[in-house]
Image 1: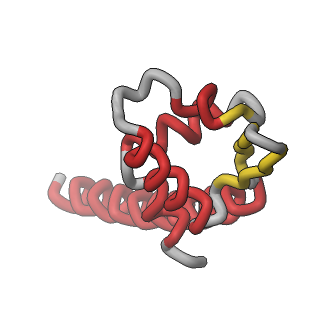
Image 2: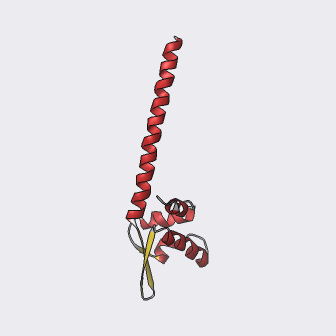
Image 3: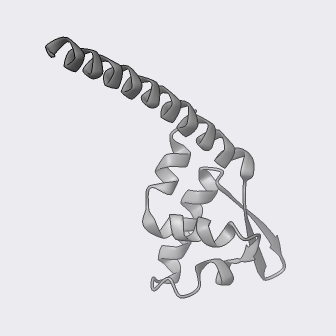
Amino acid sequence: MANDTFTALAHPLRRRIVERLSGGPATVGEATGDLGVSKPTVSRHLRALEEARVVTRVIDGRSHRLALRPDTLAEASKWIETQRTRWEGLFDAVGEYLQEERADRR
């Protein structure tokens, strides 16, 4: 899996945009309003999200509507779940080993 998704989501401002879009498609103004940054900064962050295929943009005249790309986010979620399962297994093995060590010392 490409790291682009995680790179795009690494910045807190971009995560806020993604959180806002999780409620459904929105205009650029609705998704980025009151973030407290300049329009060029917003544009750079949106470009990063679009290039990572986290967000799509549909232009209808002067209106730009943004939406999340669930397929890209699903890939990231699947990778995270695989890692979580792997680490839980490793922690379980360490826990069992420590219990056996304690039992042997008694």
